[in-house]
Length: 478
Image (cartoon, rainbow, N blue to C red; front, side):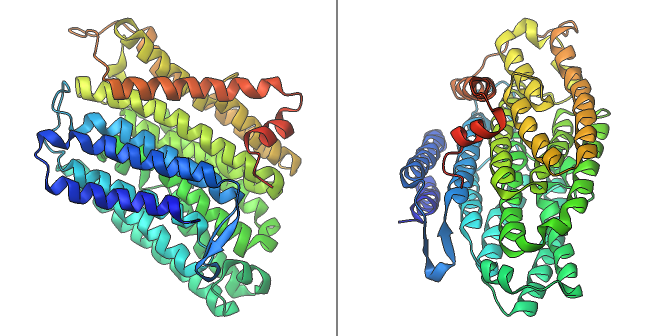
């Protein structure tokens, strides 16, 4: 029963794979709605089972309040990604990429990755944890190289090589933990672990492996090339689901296996956060390609995100979960616009967005709302999410980190405004005209943009923004 959402996703993936065998190319348009239905069914079951707690397979698979919320985050990422990707295989779009084919296999692999991420947050020993991580990650290597061109092939190759390196480091760290304790269960490792020198080596290896998934500096080197070379829906999924999976992995290892030593990691985490947000924001200023730009934006957001580990679990966990949800909705709103513009024009440079507000004002407005939320402009949800995280760091005594984060938020506003300037101030390019938004993208852009605004405004109705809002928004977090 507790594993039903994951089984629905895996069952949907196999149904898509076998259905694709018996459909002509023209009738394969039903595959995307079928994938959406499967994810929606898994989401409904997840909501029905919340906030129940239980375990299966001898305690190797368990669910609790945090795992339910992570599963909702993963399912939302998958649902929006499938909606964004529907135009990827549509021959009616203005600029159809002939190098992108095989929609049945595309959705199947995407759902397998989604299932792996959902298993990851419920894993309770290091064996199932690692297998779940690989199930979530290996399909992404394939998806990154889905376009049959040199840029996408290079992205997939770099991703798989660096991904294998990070997986090796993580596996080595987990092996050291097993050797030190003789246990594979995460909670038992946490109870029996002693701060021996080998433990700190294991912790360093694990931090490197987790840092790759979360694009933490200096483990971020893969992001820009992979984001640029992968198909746009894959880039969107990488920017949110891969980051959420990295955060789930960090939750599992840092809170369960190394929770008693987390205080010793406060300063290194703060330094990682400061370096990550600073490098991401500074390098983003110089980017010209919109997808590379979003890669460094994602790196900077990871720096803000891990600030939640500086506080107590009762404050840090809900703050990070709320910000992760806000980031997913906001980032996918921006990527929906990028997907729309790329399909209609075939362009991916920031300068190509000039005059978009004059030919498609509603689309430009949605893009501006998403960018301002990522920058942390009130009253949008990005501001509220950052406020929670900054409060956690401040209460932990890291006032200097809050100051660094505030300066970086100001820098990020500058480079996000570059795109807004192109859309609203620069003249319309020669030959540019109003572009047609397909129903799937129109619904996705509308829902994500409205959600970005609503999640920022609703907390303002509460007297204590930090305490009461998290209690309201995440009622099952204990």
